[in-house]
Structures are given as C-alpha cells and as structure tokens.
Amino acid sequence: MLCGEFQWNGGRRPQAGVAVLGFVMTMTNSARTLRRWNWVHKWSSLVCTVFLLIICITGLPLIFHDEIDGWLDGAQTYAELPKDAPRANVDRLAAQAHQHFPNEVVRAVFFDDDEPQAVVTLAPTQDADLSQNHWMRFDARTGELLKVIPSLKERPLTFLDLMLRLHVDLFAGLPGNLFLATMALLFVAAIVSGLVLYGPFMRKLDFGDIRYNRSGRVKWLDLHNLLGVVTVAWTLVLGVTGIFNELSKPLFNLWRATEVSTLIASYKDKPMPEHLSSAEAAFEKAKTALPDRFISSITYPTTASFGTPHHYVIWTKGNEPLTSRIASPVLIDAETGEVTATPALPWYLTALQISRPLHFGDYGGLPLKIIWAALDLVTIVVLASGLYLWLVRGSSPVERRAAKGRRLSAPLSAPAE
Amino acid sequence: MHIWKWPILIGVLTVFGLLSALLGQFGLWVWLAWIALSVPLFVILLSIKGTSAPKLTREMIAHLEQLDEKDWNSHYQRIKALPRVVASMADPIFSRAYRQSQFLNRGVSEGSDVFGRFSLSARAVFANAATSVNIWFKSTTGELRKAVLFAILDGTLVWALIHIAMPPIIELVIYALVGVGAVLALKNAAAAAIRDAIGNHPDL
Image (cartoon, rainbow over all chains, first blue to last red; front, side, top):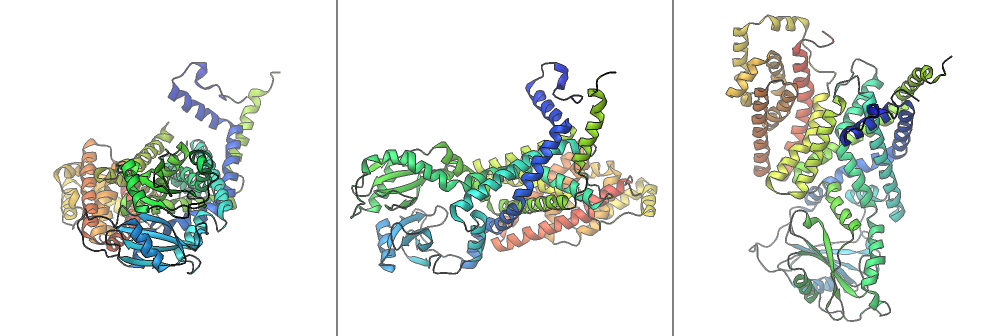
C-alpha cells in the first residue's frame, strides 16, 4: 500500500470537515485512484465534448431569444389603459381565434404576466402534433388581434428554431432528449472528476498561475484548469439542470400516468365531452380555488400528453419570486364546469420547474444574460482546450505521476530481506 | 488547503449569485447576483496575461527605482489629472493607500495609457470594477481594500445609470463594448503593468 493511502490523520478521530477534506486529499494522492479519476475524466469528457460544444454554441443565441425575437418582431404596442384594466373574456378570445381558423380547434390560451398579451393556440384536431399549432397573439385587455403566427409546418425554420431543436433534442424527439440527458450526465461526471484531479496538479502553482514560458500544451493545461475550476459551480448547476430539462417530457408523462390518472379514474370510460362549458367560467373557478395565484394558461380537453380528455387544465403560478417559478394545476370538469382537483405537483416536477430558470439564466435581467453568455463562452473554451490537450497528448502528467508513485511505493511494499 | 481557498470562495459566490437572483429577483438581490456571478469572469480576466502585454524595459524599471518621493508625488498629480479613469482613485482614502504602494503607482500609470483608448462608459465601468478587483487581489493593506470597495460601489452606480438611461439595444452594445474593453484593458494594462512594475518579473 502506498504511504498515506487510506491512513489519513494518523488513525485519530477527526472532525467531520477535516475528515472529508483529508479523505479527498488522500484519495487524490493515491496513484491508483488518480489513474482511475483520470480515466473517468478522460472518457466522460471525450464522449460528451462534441455534443456539449453543440449545446453550448446553440445555447448562446437562446440566452437572448427574447431580445432577438423582440428585435425581429419590432416593438409590440398595446393600447394605453390603466394597470388595473380588466382582462378580455377567455371565451371571446377563443371565439375570435376560431373565426380566423374556422376548421381548427382551440387548444390553449396563455396569459403573460410581464406584458398585457394573451396567446391562443389552435390546431386542426385536438390531438394534432404540436408542429401544426397556429398561434394568435391578442391584447389581453381589449381583445385586439395583434399577430398571427403560422405553424412550424407552414413557415421555414427560423434561426432560433434551429438553435432550439439542436439544443434540446438534435431533431430526434424523445430519443434525442434522452441522449442529450446522458451527455449532460457525462458532463457532470467530467466536472466532478476534473475537480478531483485539480488538487494534485495545482500543488506547485499559485491559484491563477499560467505558465506562459512553457510549452503550448502546458499553457493550455493551466488555462483549462483555471477556467474549469473558476466556473465549476456554474457548469455543475447548468449540467444538473440540463439533465432535468431534458427529462421534462418523461417526468410529466410519469406524473400524468400515476397521480393524474388516479385523480381522473372516474372519467376513464367516458367519451370526450361534445359540448364544453365556458372556459371563462372555468378561469373564474380556478381563480376562486387558488385566489393568490396568477393564471398563466388554460389547456382545453385533449388526448394529447399535455392535457386530459375531460378537463380544462388551468396552470397557475405564485406571485413571490420563487413561487412564480412553480406552476400548479387546477382540473375543471369541462362538461359541468366544476373543480375536480387542485393536485400538488410531485417533488420531481417542482425540482424541474426550479431548475428551468437556473438553466436559462432569464431571471435577472439583461446583465445576468450577458454574464450567462460569457460563462457559456468560457465553457466552450474549457471544452475545446480539453479536446486540444487530448489531441496533442504525449505521456500524460497523470501517467507520469502514477509511474512515479509506483516507483516510490515499490521499496515500501517490498518484503524486507 | 491553499489550493482550494480561491476555488471554494468563487464557488460559494457563484451559488450565492445564482440563488440571490432566483429568491430575491428584485433590487439589491439582483445587483448582488450580477456582482457575485461576475467574479469568476473577473478572476479569469485577471489571470490571463496576453502575449502582447506591454512590458517595462530594464531601463524603465531602473528609472522608476530611482524616483524619490517628490518625483512620485508629481507622477501622482499627473495621473490624477487624467480624465475619469483615475477619478475614483483620487479620493483621500485611495491617495493614502496609493502612496503606500509603489508598484501600484507604477502599474496605474502604465495602465492609464491603455485605458485612454476606450469609451467613457467602458472606462468608467472598467476603472471602477476591473481595476479595483485587480488591486484587491494584489493588495495587502486594509486601507486599500476600503478604497476598492468605494470604487466597486461607484462602478455599480454607472451600471445602474446605463440600465436606466439607455434603450435595451444600446445597453447591450455598451455591455459588449465594456466586455471587450475590459478584456483588452486587463490584458494590456492592469495585469501586465502592475505585475511587471513590481520588478520581480521572471523575465527581468
């Protein structure tokens, strides 16, 4: 056994913090463990780097998607009304939208809490693919139609659409989501293993030192270590929240197949309602059921995965900084207009919703977005430099250290003659 | 433990920044988030030394070494007269700390030429934030840290004014300019000049 391996602190009982630190330092001191961590870092990084580069590059414009959209659309003008002006009737908005697309059905109405706008979504059938959705933007107070947005099938892919699809699923749907979630998991493994390896290789250097007078490989190794360790907390958060976001479809489907199914079990054999009750009345019922929450959308009855066949699913969100990120639904019977349930979301969906702003960086104004973009650029440099270091590798420092460790340990482990 | 001191501090600041904007979302908390999450970026900028950084020649170093107190004071007056970039450094607290550290004097004087290239906004933000953070890292005296704190607060005021007064697209352009300016200025002035002016650069 190597000197010091698993014998930190001389066998005395240490305090918890010291114990953990000592254990970590000892673990990273052992040549064998160092080789293992190096193996984990090398292969987890190599496998995910190309995909992470795609994610980082496509994520860059997505950080500013609001600004880019606003710039491309031009400034949106709304009627000048008092702040407490009443909102338009939901049924009227739906009827106006239906007039525009008489052969389509209304799928959902969304309300914005930042701007006085309501967006109505329509599709040829209630269970049509999302790519067939038409979007109509209204002034949420006057009901004036502001813009009609064609479906994805009717318009060419925009730059932001392309970035989004590459970022989210590589145009592969759910398999793409799962694949990128796996890549994000490997990214997290690469970060953790990189952090473990950071200690042993920085012992002789001050923090932030870059050896410019050495070879290009050493210079880039120092830069890779510096950029990686300085941004480690941010990249770790982005990696973990990225996994959650990629799993959002399966997680929502799980919730729908378990808790929601139980709640609506009594509707199982009923056909979909032919005549729907008023969506406006459903809106008011939800408002009464959860008076302190903002209603962000109403989903009409559907057999698609984002709703139920017999209910208006009304999504609400809180008014506090944190609760405004956590949506919770109210199920209203679409035939009788009565509240069926106000289910609490399971922990995994709450975690998913909290992880969204932490991944998107859209919760602290433009300066936060700029910082997000800068950190994203730094991550790109870390990924690219890691790839470069692998391409120009010789005998790696880890292997040299491990070999040195083996040489040093040999006399200690040899039996006395 | 010394290896982990700065990474742990930066990691804690990053987590604080991420959570403060999420939980606070308004006013001071968002400002704190911006500052805390900018720290990793500043640390990176301060650690990067460009190959094109201006270097003091042996002759210049020798000349600087020979300057006496009177010369330093006149040097200080010249720097004080420069627009904006050293305005925040002209307050009494800073001037005391300023005299305490010769290498700082030299570094600022070298760096000021580079600062002069940038727009008023970029210089204002840079002078108050980037330079201050750099000085913070290099400083050893408590008084200098006080001065840095003032400078950072002054810097946030400039950001606030830009945010309030400018339309978003102009604001975005300014932030981009500031970013580029800060990188160039840090590369070419603050880091190299201050380090080189200490006189113990390995190449000297």
